[in-house]
Length: 138
Image (tube, rainbow, N blue to C red; front, side, top):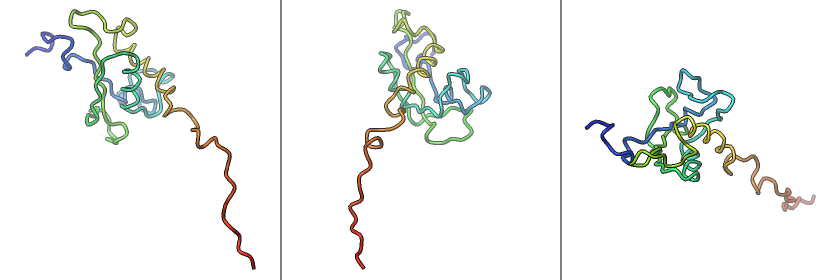
């Protein structure tokens, strides 16, 4: 069956986003699709998925998929996110996201704002606790 004859709601018509598309450590020839200025350090498919679902897009996380150009085959960069751009009638799901590039740029903007990406956690910013060990008396 031809892919163009399937409805837009069919997952085969959804766009694929791999973490390598947003990775600042990859070159354009290795698969990066955004400029070096906006690219991220080692994004994960889970982070991309979380950002896109929060934006109101229909997305599906596929953990066991890998980009064919990724030579490292590491488990951190593994996975892809499928995203539905259009409804069955051809209208956009979200007017803010008209194409793949707008979704990639949005992900590059929002992933650094995730709590998992923020620098220091509540436990690391707490005051150091005094040691409770007793010194031996001689």
